[in-house]
Image (cartoon, rainbow over all chains, first blue to last red; front, side, top):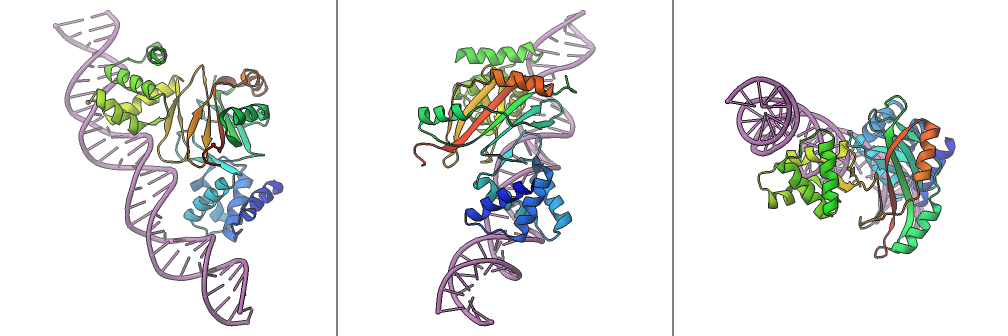
Length: 140
Length: 140
DNA sequence: TGCAAGTTTGAGACTTAATATCAGTGATAT
DNA sequence: ATATCACTGATATTAAGTCTCAAACTTGCA
């Protein structure tokens, strides 16, 4: 948790960006939510803690975090993008196609695959996202 | 190719939707493009063949094809959604984070994984999408 | 400390993708 | 042949996200 905050914060500073009060607030709120929030939801929550922070700043902070590779926007076509934390360069989740519930999971034996892909397509792999669609136990 | 058109067409009819002239035109154009087109791009191309087909119909056809599971919208945050064909319930590609080039690939030994996930989370898996991000050979 | 250069910020206007509406058309079943 | 229901498309609307620009911060350096 706190660890996550540090990871994101470090990613900011290590890439030459400034870790301002506004950005700290955004990061802390995002981590507190465990990811899977939209920019506007996040902006609202951030303002409960830091009322002066504007919508634009939230968008821009998310953009920066995306650029340095620690989060990623996820789009399900149901409204706004949601942002997820990229643990060690990857993120995996199940999405129920009926109720749109999202379940994160960790297991993924793709290290092998991504390496082979890199060779085959002359591609320098940095991260990956696996989305599994189906019906959750309540929806089938 | 032609096979793809049949797959999509059948998915339409088998789910109780009507395979109209407009929908045929959309499907044929989508397959001819090999996927990875936005709705508006597709609408434009469809009109080169079937000028009467409206934008709205293209959106709705894509929605139906999505519902029956044969295509899926992909969002890279760079403008409009792109639609990809789901081969046997899955799609995999590499995306260059610099030039946004997309390379589709087939290999994915995930049958095993999805099965285990289904058990673990009591989830009925239907399809999946694997996105691998990195730098293509021209961009690094 | 004080200054200059470069970042970051936020209110508001703007762009663009996508959805809702609704009357009209076309397909299907009996 | 007709009644029913699905589909269509022009237009209006909504909503997500971006652009702009002046003001406010940070930082490094003298």
